[in-house]
Image 1 (cartoon, rainbow, N blue to C red):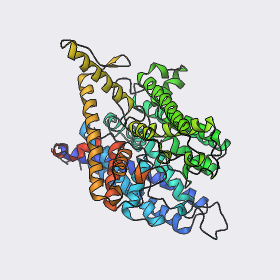
Image 2: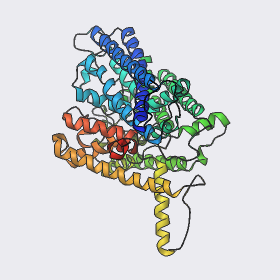
Image 3: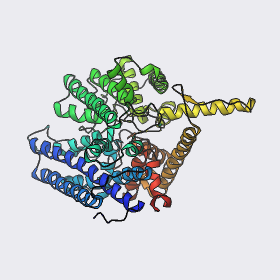
Length: 533
């Protein structure tokens, strides 16, 4: 085996195979937990067998990939290049999205396109769904246990588990294994996975492994805190776990057919959900610094200040618009009561805060349907908020506010240069000078974001009968690329993607993955130079 040629292409294939095997190992571990939950919650034998078989297939593929790559590698240390990092993460996400979809196919028998769409939506924390039939969430007619879902608890837990794994990035779990397995540098994988601008302040500690442990520690801590508080304020333990997984990951999958609108009668619970969605949309390095230095460092961060102010202004604008328009409770909430027109100030504020934060954090939970309000200015604001979304280094999707801040500063600089052409001034973020290459990449990212959104919307308008109107086509494209979940038109908070055709579902699944990995990681896979020696 040691006589294997040391060419770069062969080396890249080994690196890709090794990382893919570890990604599949993480998914197989999640499947094992889900199988145990399904068995423990007394699901039907078909559902339990489906998860068990998917676990065996995934674990076998992970073992096979790892064994073959390890044999080819011999005793050499695997060093990853920039190309290997991007290709490994990009292809790894595509492979995992297909393999994990087997669980949906074997348990509830949905078509492959639907299974891949649901899996991609879960792993990318988009929260868009094709499971619009409430029969999935509610007990079948004649069932003695009215609280038991039609297809059991395993499917609902698996959707939440996909959210939770995708939120922090399944690659983060792989990064913990790489040093122990002596598989070489992990920095390239980290750069390909972590969202937002890459500056010297991104890595929370000098050692990458320690940084990964810190992020996972905060991620797990927030998840446990959410579970406990959700249960204390009214959820069952199962609902609390599933909703906590989906909240901290900003994923949005819910075990309830009507999502968080099911708990509209528990205002304190919904305010707690708003808090956790907001925290999950903040840069995790700020949380880490808060707990390690015991100092409040949030306001010192320029991106956080911008994000916080936008949240407050947007909530005030939406709440005021709802109050002045006199939206009734029936129209305000997804499941509002008939005949009750009086709405309190707290309810206007709660719905406004919930909808603004769920969009900005890209969680996708909804307690109201913004299209039923009939306020065009609010719809336009929500569409605008779907572009930047959360902060860099968070579990949220979107373009990230750090890039918006840099874009505004560059625009301001160019306007002032019209008056003083010889003026020289640096672009700074948190008093750190940004290299011209970083600024250029940011501008390219913004342009590419717009191009992909318009291209996907155009393709949907051509090939998808459900997206013949502009609002549905644009809303589906934007919400998929930004990993938000609900959109406009047929895919508003009360709708879903069930009626889309197979081509559209696969296109949107790819769009979700492109958005989750921040465009470049997937786009480079389509460049011929990526695959050259």
